[in-house]
Structure formats: C-alpha cells, structure tokens
Length: 154
Image (cartoon, rainbow, N blue to C red):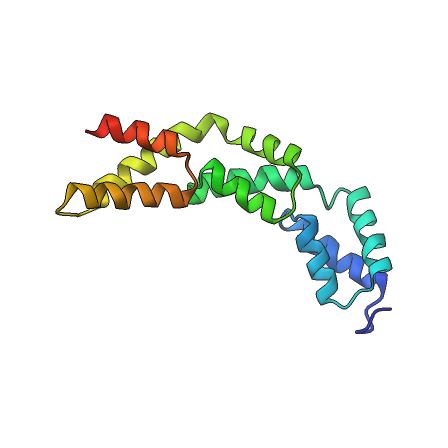
C-alpha cells in the first residue's frame, strides 16, 4: 500500500494501461508513480515489471517520439535531440531514434522551408529572411541546412 491506499498490484495495472496506449519514457512513468504516492521500493518493483513485460522500452519510446515529432510537427534533429535529452534518454537511444527519421528528413525540411517562405508577407527581404531563419531554427533544423537553402533561394 502507498500513501493513498493504492496497492502495488493496482498500481501495476494502472501503469500497464498508461504505457500500453502510448509509449512512455522512464521519467514519465516515475513521475506518474510519484503522483500516485508510491514509495521508492514499489516504484523500482513496478518499473522492473513494466520492463520485463515490455510495457516500458526506452528505445521504442525514443524512436516513436522522433518519428511522431518529425512527421507531424516537422521538428528537426536538434529539437528532437534536445527534447529526448530532457527526458533523460541515453545518447545511444537518441542516435537510434534520429536514424529513424533519416529517410524523410531532407524532404520534410525542404517542403516546410518552402511553405514557410511562401507564407511570409514581409515588405523587407531582410525581415522575411530573418523570420524564416528563426522559424526553422526554432523547429530544430541545423543552421548549415538553413543557410545552404537560403543561398539557393537568392
């Protein structure tokens, strides 16, 4: 039992469901368990159970996170890497996750960059370039990619 009267078995069931409808990282699962008032020994036991039964897999999480953020939000590698580091994902898993998006990466970058360029209505070319560059940098694309494309746009 924890502080809220939830048994370890009940917490396991809750967390199996929590991890089954969306991939999770350790940090999210630990945070959820702490919010349920679980003690550290129970947290360790539940984490082991989730890993053994493949509910919790950090590599799978990192790959699906990278694919999703790149495909739907058009995030670049730098932003994805930053977000995964924030979630305490290992550098090996980050590297593996970034390999997942390699095939679509440049096509998505070029289409996003072109769409953004066309949507900017700035009277000054310099302002338009600045807004465009800032947008792509916030999305997490590498500055070398951005400035190489900017040369081609001129």
